[in-house]
Length: 154
Image (cartoon, rainbow, N blue to C red; front, side, top):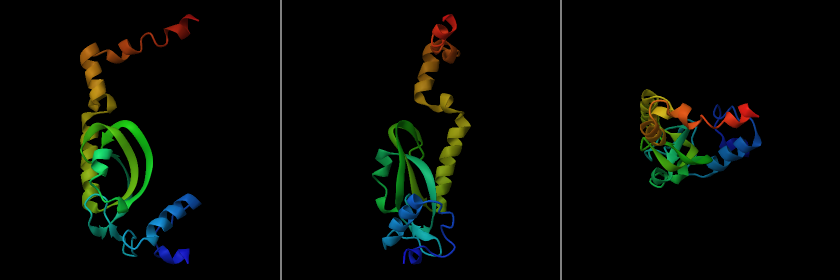
């Protein structure tokens, strides 16, 4: 009976019981299920269209405006991180597994591309930008200069 809920040719890479329980719990609900044509509810725009599961980082302000039915799972919670929906660093960021349509996936990709264009975390994160202004261009060496001195002396 559980195999009837999973459309044929879909979710073939289910490797463990946790993944199977996650998919089956999502498929049992009539509103959130994904049919055999990969059509389901998009987490980003709330449309019933072609969707695919994706891992993204989202802040709690943005997650409150989205349909919670399309959310598969909250993978991890971080106190600080980059939100792909508001395109900035914020507090209380969660990594989620949810269904997204092609248009929302392109928006997430553009946000991620802009973040990579700025450089790594040390170039884009407001904390490290402030440290660079305060300490100068050698801020990394100055901040960690005394960190390992006690290991060298002993």
